[in-house]
Length: 359
Image (cartoon, rainbow, N blue to C red):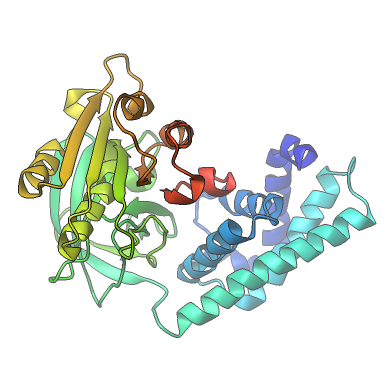
């Protein structure tokens, strides 16, 4: 894998060139502009191959990937074409380590990966559409680059608090980005998302600065495992950085609805006081529930310091932990939680980069 990583840009370019020349019928499945998409498919495949022995995490990841690819129009017959071009690109640019045994191993790995994805998509096809249409019913700009967006799906959309969905806007067809649900399932069926516009973020900027009530977006299927196990009675330690507070808020609502009164400690991190855009909501929840403690953490030096805050309080060894936010925060947060005595099987987050080392 190290040899392939060194030539990943060349492998990616050659992979797509092969794919679109040999199989031009697949080109419409991809965005018109490939800038944002270019590295995603190949990176996902290489990541899955690298972690093929990490079965529980990898299978969950690939099943979500398979279900999610239904929204692109991906069919079982498309997978052999992708595999053929992947092997072709690797053979060309990884010649220093490529031999018949290596090729056979990659064929076996890709066959396993694709079959898990195909099977998950087939099961999902029996119970859910590939995507949902949803009308924007509310658009609230909280800061100059953060919006809270509420949508109404055109048909029931089942999900769990702590999960996320991929969103596509009408302005950038076939470009999807993941956003966490900002509330537990509601009786009126509405869904809310917290979106921060990031530099060069086509989808995020469209949602923050262009979307308005009446616009229609598309939703992919719900995914993610950062959900509460309501059969347990342990305390819950939650870390939310930036817009990562959205799924944490959903988890608080979920626990409240189940009425279990489990102790819940929420650390809400931001770079400045201004970035604590949802602190009023979180403090209102704290006032309503005696079992909830909300601790804002603002770093005056421009770095999120949630891990330091974790070490200040505690002990946490009897808690289940949940993290949501930037990848760097999750990485350091997991280290801090492990150091505080929480075993890895009781630490939940949905950063793919941390789960299987993929962005």
